[in-house]
Length: 304
Image (cartoon, rainbow, N blue to C red; front, side):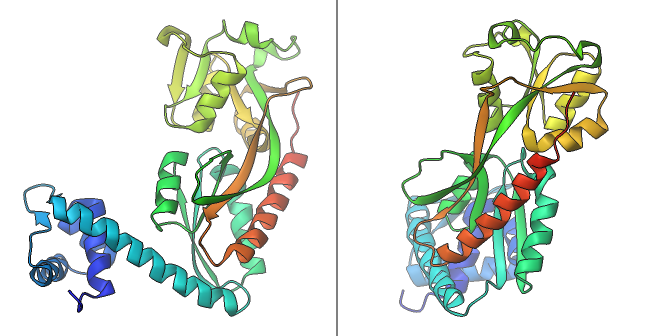
């Protein structure tokens, strides 16, 4: 057991995640036979079977599940040791794995990447766009360094930093432009277009419209905000979008976008990272950059 290597732990971690030798090997940038050989060697050193091999996907044994739980703790500790050294060297450099939710990525990510590259010239940014639940899991397991999400998250192992608040806007057919803005009670009676389940913005939109248990006939779903806006332009209903999305969606749709009267519904965008990450000071600097980008985007919003 004392001769187990970090490389073997990383390979086994990939196999546990992908449940497939070929996919795990691809993720590790090695051949499938090489990864299989390393896993077999790890099992030999442990003296027990860690993987049930069957097609098309493998399964971990009970010991395999327990083994990778401890193994990931080791890998995370090693990564944070590396981050401790990075933090002592000065300006942030090297790989940075950033997660971002789909209702933010299309509207802020290009500007964020430009701003981060200008501030940290040696930074190697890797971005993953996904829903909040998946990003939080990856953060906790050390697969991401930080993430831009809607707050609060309220995970005890994560540090949250609020960046800015943004209002929601109503998207309705062009023919409704100039009409009074419907109240939440009236919105509740309209055909509401929503993101698919799993998006936190879906739940926020339902809350704004005071809908807790909507009937299926009242709702239609889309995979992105842009899809929903195009559906509104085709006369299929109404939807809500965040303030940072207005400038882009207003240019590409045949719909009317209007802000709600004060006090308008809002959401808080922020960044989260593991409390144990030694790069907390550097992440705070990144948060200030994201805050600046978001505020500039909000200043560009123009509606009917």
